[in-house]
Image 1 (cartoon, rainbow, N blue to C red):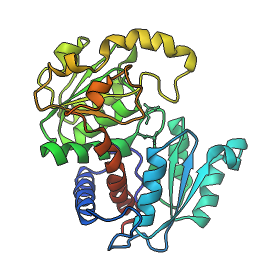
Image 2: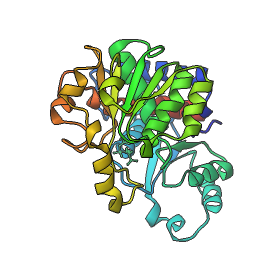
Image 3: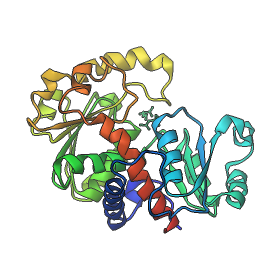
Length: 308
Ligand code: CP
Ligand code: NVA
């Protein structure tokens, strides 16, 4: 039994295996209606709980469809509808759910909820996003990059804007997959030093460059995310927008990256804020491939967790 809590906590060989398996499973399904089962049914007889304490479109639907394509069943639970949202402890919830289901995916606020769930559950627990990281997204992003441009090893990834949870998972992945990261945003929103240190210790380069034009020079991939995440207070919105405005990804900025640089965004996006529609809908953008690849990448993650 394996949990999938974060990319830096997962064995690098296993991570590579998941990306390769996801690519193979995607190819095997080409041209099929979404609702048809895969030829292999590794999750047959398995029940998966999908718990959401925050909103979600992609994570909710891609996990649900992925489990079904592999022959399993799901139950989608809202934290507020569970006793968990009304005072039952995480430890008790984890032990109870382990009596009924074979795997738990949880999207929550504080990372401690995820970690405690994993500590007390007898079944694998998958991180579907916390305030601190979003590993499933970056697995999909690596699959997407490699589909378009080949191995990500040795490439330059430029993160623009807020050094948030998605940025953190890019830093976790940098060390495991061997790519360099440049962060470009205001000092107040720098990524956590611990994660920058982890990547550097793993032997890849992490550069902090306040000037976005300098940052994207030589970039193979430019990434943006919302300026106000689900865990950020709405009252901080104006302050954050003021700090981040000069980091918008637009055609003028993309012109300084490599001519074949890709653009990614985990979505949901705020068009004309962190990125223009011209870039989102332009030839360098692979945002909808990323969304599709959530499905394929997470299917491989679930197989790894269950060992099937
Ligand atoms: N990218 C992502 O996780 O999207 P959702 O919030 O819609 O799940
Ligand atoms: N950083 C964003 C990602 C959403 C998928 C958030 O946490 O709201």
